[in-house]
Amino acid sequence: MHIDEVKTFLTVVEEKNFTKASEVLSLSQPTVSVHIKNLEKEFLAPLFQRTTKSLMLTREGEVFLDHARQLMGTYAHMKEALYMMHEEVSGTIHIGASFTIGEYVLPKVMARMQQEYEGIQFEVTIANTEEIIQLVRTLKVDIGLVEGHSRAADITLTPFQTDRLAVVKSTSDSFSPVTRGELQDQKWVVREKGSGTRESFDYVMNANGIRIRSLLVISSTQGIKEAVKNGLGLSLLSEAAIEEEQKHNTLELLSIEGIDAKRVFSYVLPKRAERTKNIQFMIGCLTENL
Image (cartoon, rainbow, N blue to C red):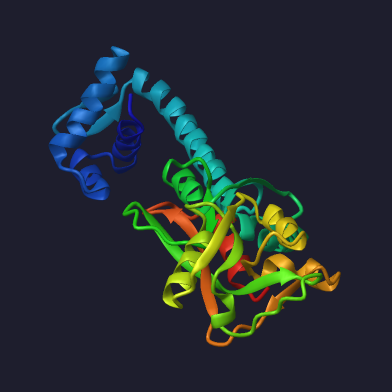
């Protein structure tokens, strides 16, 4: 039994005519007849008594009518309940975020969301941009937040915030370059390949013709900051990532003549994905000024 066949049965009862029922349902009359025959075959009982002038329910049809109405009522309530799950801001949002966003931007967004809807919960996975995009593609997270790019055809990236990157050094280091020439042949502490921050670093170095003496690769922004504090090299980091270090005077942003590195933070969704109320609400919070 299919719900469409039950709907056809109820419409025939209401219209008392197969032809009128077919018009109401936008079905052909043979299709309406097939629906009724399928029900009669499944329940081994005639549902209608047909004459040339009238269409009446049989006793079996009367019993079936009561249950059909109950069934359609239950179906409507079930559909509404499931629909409301998508329309109410509640439950858990599974978020994948690249390191800079996940550690320094996302907490503010989540706090704002919970101020408005206390019942909303979060599960956050932090990884590099490539890994987050793969989590989105395999539907293991509801939304991804990244600072890099992707050519994947089955996702959409939508910018929500501009981020500024700056050269960072330890405040205990007396070396304070102010020109691109002074950045030549320096030691650098960087993220791993596949990271949005590493992608930006490689672009800035290549675009400005800056030679690199050595690279220390650390797959954590916090680890990079600790390495820079301890004099292991310079780094190129998001301004959002070093707010606390600036307050405590442990890291310093350098203003390098000719280098103005900007990038965008983007949210990632599978193409043609349905945007639930939770996701719509989160996107709204992301696009507000932080």
